[in-house]
Every structure is written in C-alpha cells, then in structure tokens.
Image (cartoon, helix red, strand yellow):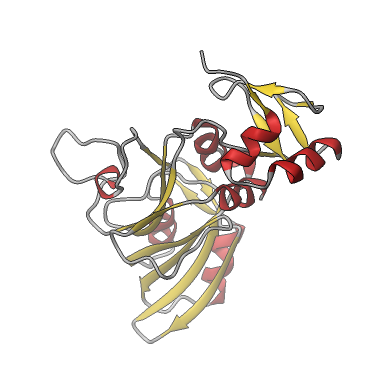
Length: 237
C-alpha cells in the first residue's frame, strides 16, 4: 500500500501548482478527495483515491504517464497485435505499460493519447463527459451544404444514427473536398461510414484535436508527454 501523502504536497509534486497555491485552492473549496471537500492536513492515497482540482482528476501517482502521439497511417491502435504489426504503444518511449486511449483506424492518422491513467482514459473515451475529437476528412466529390447539414442533423448507420457536433466545408474542388467535423462518439469507422452513407468516400482522415489538445508541430510517429496542466485543461472540458 502506498504511503498517504499530504494533499498539497501531492498536487505540487504532480506539477500543477506550488504547494502554497495548492493550500489556497484547498481553502477555497476547489479540491476534493473522492468527491468530498478537503481541509488542510488531509492526505491522499495515490493508488486508490481520486483527487480533483476544479473538477478535473489530478494524476498523483508518480508512475502515471499520458503521451500525445501523431499516429501514422498503418499503425494499429492497440497495446499489442497478434499479427505482429506495429502499434501506437511501440511508438511511445516509456518504461511504463501504456495503452491507447480510444482508437484511431489503421488507415486514419492523427492525434491519439497513449496512457496508463485509467481515470483519464474513462473520461476521454466515455461520451457522457463530452470530450470532442476533431477531424479533417478529404472526400471524393463536392459535398454541398445539404450534405454538411446532414452530418450534424444525423446520418442513419447500420448500428444506429450518428451525428457530428459541428461540420463545415473547409475547401472544395470539382472532384474532392475537405470537411472538418467535431465528434463526441467514437464508434468503429464512424466518420468514414457517415460519408459513405452520403455518397462521399473518404480518401484521407486526420484527427487534429482531442478536446483542447492539438499540436501542429507533431509529425507522424512523433509523441510528447502531456503536462499536468494540459491534462487538467483537457478533463475540465
């Protein structure tokens, strides 16, 4: 069992703020332990307790890591693959046992999180928390505004209706177009199937943002570890 740590020390050790600022946040009622307000002197068990600041979980276990990766086309969004294909975990340098947060199809590319933080994984992947994923889709043909409107109104798929939170036409030519979609759900190949149902095949699909997270400086195959401040912003919505 891990040693219980004073809450202000745990917050400071996580890198979110100084110990003095953490004490002020505790006094202001912004810090909760397992859903209950804390007082100065309270301690946290890093292995079992849930510590939140302004409603966002704070990773107080020292072994927790979350990385932002630009997944290239052809890389599998699993921790391991029985066929021996390269996975997103293979691309992230870490001594920890990491797992992909959600999925991104093998023939799609862009941002995906790789982490060993179960609470973060739950919040990012479960639709009830409303953390969006933004995509750029290059599609065949020239979708008109009625097609873009259908994306937000809802498209009937074989596993139920699907809809984007928002959709807009970024660029178009006679034979192809670029559409940006913001999604909350993450069903299997959902974006591609939506466009297929509207007679516009997706030629290239790039995830450009996860909630508040984006990084245009990441190239395919590159990753970086997230700071606690970025994690808090992501999970605060």
